[in-house]
Image (cartoon, rainbow, N blue to C red):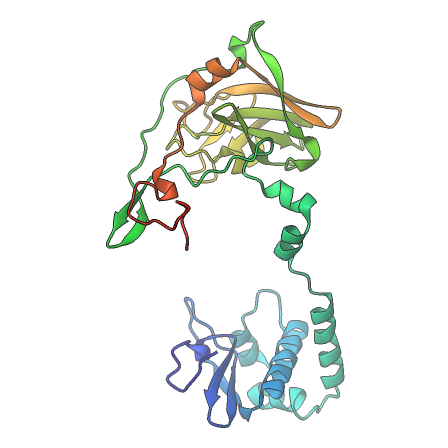
Length: 318
């Protein structure tokens, strides 16, 4: 939507665009940017608000039910028999007697629309799945420091070093001092994926593998750049072995052994995990042993405490 003919919002490069005039709105249709840009075509002029919405709805609904899969609106209009004039006859003059049906179908879309994210925000059970850690209420604001540049905060882009070699600790070193740690309600964990938990000062990733019908646990930090993101990795198979792929650089790891698949020099600490009586448990060493091997302090700069950007509570305020 552009507020005047200067067209700063580039409405004429969109599937549907409105440009304000002294008398209402000019409606443009079937444009697009991208690798094959197409200028939108002026369809109707000087529309009031209600008519502008009505004709947009009809055009888009007619497009929805007549265009082929993955067809851009610009290509659809080019291939439409009769072109723009035919489209105007259908959605304005009702030449085919379809306007009532098009209006009804759009109204059905409006009436049944539900914002999935609003539903999550309004539903405590769903919102609980988006906690940073499934077992504690701790919050963190990233793995990298922020710095002050030109009166603005900017994330530092220096890479952390890659950790090459065997994991410092894993289930092969388990002894009588290890115990099963309850890390949360199984219903809150992502099925077919990973979730983060925090034990003492250590972040772990806990995975439910659908194909293997089994739970796994690893360190949350990817050895490649030490970003604690493996809980958001992609779980799958490498041959007959369960794997997780880091969501940042796609390095892959064997969930049974922790061995690097895509890079043999990168290895994860892995731990046994299980579900019992609706709870998820991970077999872990004492907290001090676990923390010595895997924990690290969260950077303080990402809460703005190390830069001159005070908002009273020390948190970033966008």
